[in-house]
Length: 130
Image 1 (cartoon, rainbow, N blue to C red):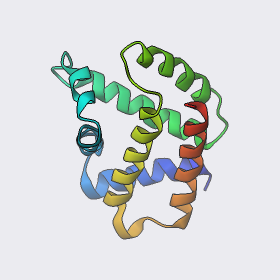
Image 2 (spheres, rainbow, N blue to C red):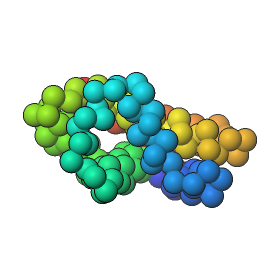
Image 3 (cartoon, rainbow, N blue to C red):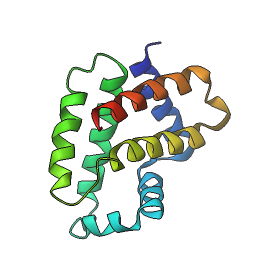
């Protein structure tokens, strides 16, 4: 199984075992960076957060593989978010929070190959957010 396939498989397992991880990821983000919650004040229905979460997953899967667009996407989003006062350092942290929540929901089904796939994607995300 390739790294992108492995990341997708861990997401599927996480959802089967613990439901959609999105709310837990944002709760962890707000706990670590309380100031980020105010950035979503106009996101009354959660649509913006869901869109951002989905894009983050797609970027991680791309970065774990061929990196056809993920690096460029991150570069652009870093610039867009800097205009909102969001530090580039938030991106790798957000991706790591996704991994942490997915890993927790996968529990004992998480293995070394899962960890390796996510580490590869997170390392690539950090490199493109520097």
